[in-house]
Image (cartoon, rainbow over all chains, first blue to last red; front, side, top):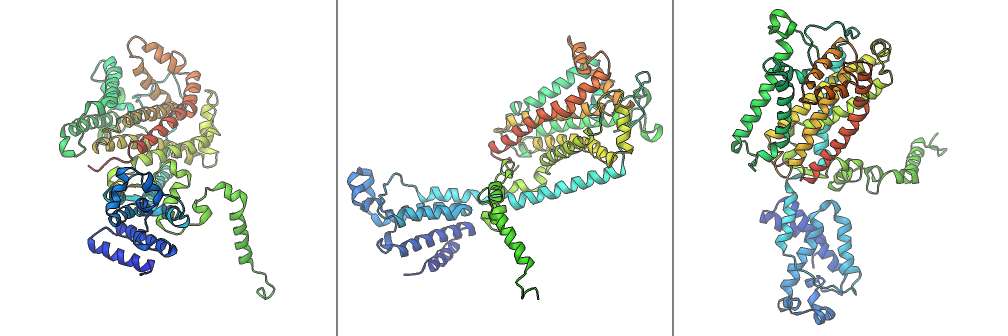
Length: 276
Length: 257
């Protein structure tokens, strides 16, 4: 009889030869090792069918109805089928492997008098699906958090260096009798202020912002196209880009191309009338 | 000599550290499985425990989709916005120590922050530039979410929460803009609030409620200060929490394009 470690190596080699991914191969090999260990520790249980063997225990076969006795017709196959299913479960989550494995061991090995009932048959493929799904996932620590930390430090360094070099503006004390010319809104409202040049105040100041906000809220309910591929949503991308660019252009005109009296001026001729 | 007398400071220190780690205080501070309790050796289980047994679990799952950590997919914009919010909270609290929202004292307080307070000017610069950057990063984050189609079901509602966060960010920036109480601040806010006066029917009432009077004055300053340092941060933290919670509940980061 091979030792558990030999079983591990053997199953690992088999799985690798079959073309399973390394993690799946590892998991199945570990499961096989656990099975082998349990068989070695309990000589009372024959190592061919180390499974709880529900149908072979007298109580359950007496109490079980027709479907439960069905596996009895080919007990070896049932045992080998059920076994990988049960043992594969702890292997599917390597991070919590040890406690789960211990629990399974207690169930069939350390407490042999415990009666197992067949409640359900889980097909091995069902387990394999669960095993495969985590394959395209990575641990947040360290992969995501390292990237976050780096980007955070880059931004912090940039803002700090910029703050050391450029001082925030502080003009003279507010004077309600002296309107600065031009007087401009904060930059994020300059697009709206620019619109005031073209539209009635009620349109530029109220209607357009309201429509924009409502359109933003409703966007996911208007755009019913389920695809996220840029090729399938050209209209959405063109529309969104158009509005974003329009507002960016309006904002930039308001920032740099508006001089005294909010009249048009080229920044390289009349200077910049703008402070952040 | 030291060895002969049995005096080994390094061993003594190790014993003390062991005592600390096994003491009730330490064990009550860190959950079973925390890396601060068991030590960290690089293994898949410990990588999971780092997140799972710390408060980070509120922010991140143990694992994320592989394409989600690609820098070109998110550009970290949402996370950076949140980081800027924290930076603004910290610098803002520091500025509050030296700032009185009364029209008589406010401007001299601003000058004192510039000239006398330790790191006052630097902290104010950080607060102002950080605020502008946060507005930009919120816009860029929205654009990223749109271009990757991440607002589509099941994430429609989180997009709405995001738009609310965008509006709250603009309101925070705008209310903060008044607080220096210089010519730039007061007249920029005048221009901004003049626009709201154009609301149909209730325009004048809206402007009165916002300014605390027919024109900008001492009441406006106190009102906007309270909005800026208490009310809006309180509201935005609630919506940030909902936003983060829904990211997880809606299945984590959206799928690849």
